[in-house]
Length: 392
Ligand SMILES: NC(=O)c1ccc[n+]([C@@H]2O[C@H](COP(=O)([O-])OP(=O)(O)OC[C@H]3O[C@@H](n4cnc5c(N)ncnc54)[C@H](OP(=O)(O)O)[C@@H]3O)[C@@H](O)[C@H]2O)c1
Image (cartoon, rainbow, N blue to C red; front, side, top):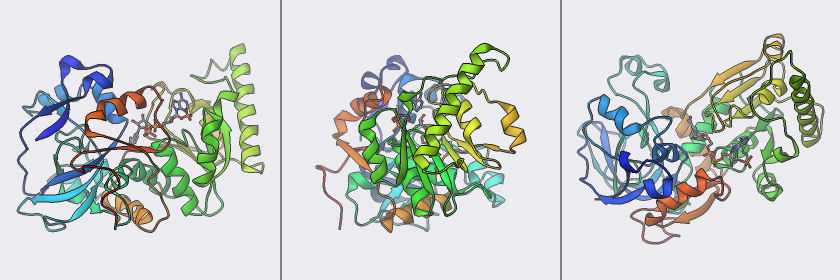
């Protein structure tokens, strides 16, 4: 089959690292499915795979005994079930599906105990930490990852959203009691991006009020159109990066910046309120501000550190106001199903921004790497021959 593949000797700029190759179609296990991929989403994790950092996913898998010296990635897709393992009962060949990216060993004792499989030791990101993902003509997935394809969507729209949507759903609705409730204010970083555009709509679907952060006024209308009640341009501020030593004069400058950002939040919210949830993923650059702004008893929920991994936080605000700092990662089956239902019901739009050809998979990752990609989620055609097909 044809597949887009990274090899260790070309780790680096995504446009060069991702190359089309012909590789063997994988075998499937008893609980696996082989999906004839119609379209794939483009996600940030495969920018990291191309760079070979912070993790060399190929070496990592080889250490665990897998023989392949390549990474055939892709963590989001729409397609048609082509073959199923002999213990699969939830889907059959011919079913039109979308695939979420939570992967775990079916016989992991933690999974078998009935607890949240996303907290199991064997959990991996499908198509990033596992091979034969959605940049393959035939992707290998576990049957539980399959959800019904929303019928009203084209292949490319259906293939574009589930990774970001399910991650955003778990962040906003998965961490009781800090979930979105009617009237809650939620600060959403990177609001015109893949995760952010899903978060705006999920907050809105549950009656919350999302305040969007972007770096460019051109993204303002997009955020308002997708549920934000107000928008802040982060380029109006300069206090980004790790928080300075709290005893230093630089901290005073930082604090002034954080307070000014808080004032901008009040203006965008139309009220002197604090966010009950801060939807975080930039990490190092923004976390001190997120920690400061989050309301009493509120939660900063984070799934990435795009700008860096060093956490600085003014702990005085954290304990005195009894805030929660919660890590979150992908989603379990129930959360993927719940957000897919919001898409089926028309409450969340995939925000498909641009559809690339199969041969442009590297280019799409390069745009993402340079933060020059269009708003929302991108897709690339795999077996679908042209855009606009698959909707009924
Ligand atoms: N753990 C998980 O389950 C999971 C799932 C999905 C994604 N992720 C990770 O989450 C991150 C975002 O993914 P995505 O798909 O939303 O990417 P995306 O579409 O590129 O959106 C991210 C947005 O973040 C904003 N941003 C970038 N650098 C920033 C900075 N220094 N300070 C503040 N904002 C910044 C940018 O918007 P502006 O420039 O407009 O502010 C950008 O559009 C990636 O690192 C990805 O790997 C993790």
